[in-house]
Image (cartoon, rainbow, N blue to C red; front, top):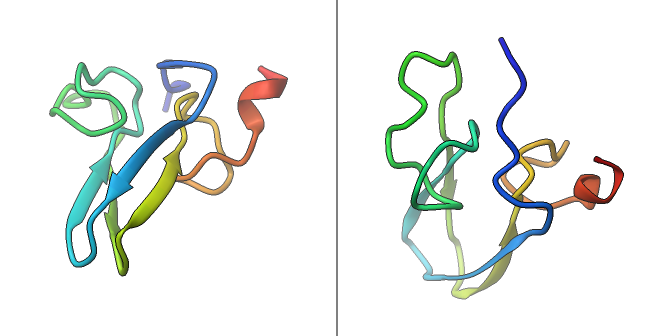
Length: 79
């Protein structure tokens, strides 16, 4: 599998809602960052499912290289 496209070198802060499901874009090609829009088809990448247990702000990875997918772990600072 190839490397994901870097969508941006910073996290996406998102207000998530409790009990809602989100699909984080793993390939970096989605036009609806940080969420999947189906652009990964044929790339070998699949979106990462995230189920919010509480309503709060989370920081989704924008560089797509985090070791803690779908969340930012600061890896973008080293790219």
